[in-house]
Image 1 (cartoon, rainbow, N blue to C red):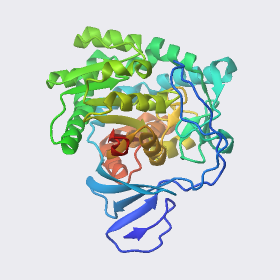
Image 2 (cartoon, rainbow, N blue to C red):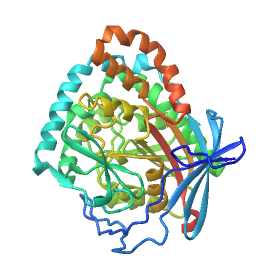
Image 3 (tube, helix red, strand yellow):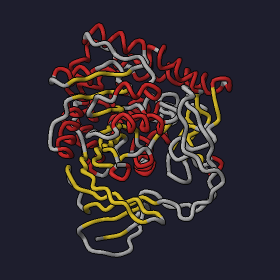
Image 4 (cartoon, rainbow, N blue to C red):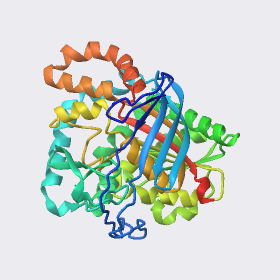
Length: 428
């Protein structure tokens, strides 16, 4: 096997496997404090002023030649030893860019004008904001964090312990709750009646197929029930029920709840999952599709899921945006024309493999699978179109996007990842 760190410096081995670190260790004092979410009912585990004997370090053992389906070993190394997680990895997801994103390409300039103005207004008003003192994932003091990029007056910083990226001057929990429950524009792309079939076919169906496959791989049977937390407009819940599964959704957005009722005849739960988790113990799978990046304390959501699944066969699924992607690189250059991915109001967190693995482990889950895919080709195309004029770029890029994205996914340079975890055997 070839051994190298995340920067790619080889240290020896053969040509069958590649090992690299997901995060370099930092030996610094950590100061953690009791933290509360908007619900003020949950806390982060804390140890004040205690110096770590040896910083935790994540690494991977992967095949040198990437395949669309491959086996990897993710390792958590600490002074207490090494924990190995055998991870089933998928690279890439077919997507009809023309069917799914043509309308958004045409509306890009209008979307950009509205989004840039609203974000700048939010982040220039200090009454809307709170300063993040501790990393949302590991609780490390943010004074040692590193500034990454400034977007619409919002500053993304990277935690020096778990490598997580977060908006340090983020909107307050009360502001976020109001935004997600009331803002119709943000929910707009998910409440288009004309795109129901396109969304279900291109986005929802591949995810459901993969989730069922993963549950069957881990437990030898198909799941009977699924809970979708932060279900948006209910497309995933709808398809689950169409497939004969018991399925329900939890949602805050009034627009999403109304759309789901009117179009799928499904009543969503408008409750706080963190405080009401005990009402949802009768599910095999709990999903967070694009949710963790929106909340101030993602650890609380996963911890609630861990309690809901404790003592049973179950899986938790979480899809999040990835920092280490082409979309991030593109948006660091075009930081004044962002409508997705590093949208600092929508995505107050952006994950690395290290920070997401840390979050799962600390919340009581053993990682069993990962799926890398993204919209990086779309991001690159739309930014070039905005720069040079859509007729010069989009026509050819639309044809090339699927090929381009497939290559990026295979190289793990995509801007989305889904992680699957099962209740930790160590906690049993």
